Length: 80
Image (tube, rainbow, N blue to C red; front, side):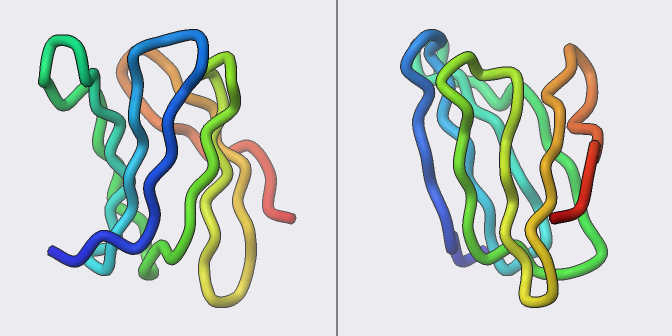
């Protein structure tokens, strides 16, 4: 899959990526593991990870979506 966005977290060893396969993935770069993956209804074009690692902004063609990063899910909070 083609990666369209990538961002890192300052306070945690996390990298968030998004791609044309409609997924947002959160990776742990120290352990080299995939922590979370969420599939959305449309292609994610850009991504920005909050320095705390608790939130992520995902950019789509029609909107920007704020999501909360939970232990077992990436949950949409608000469309901007």
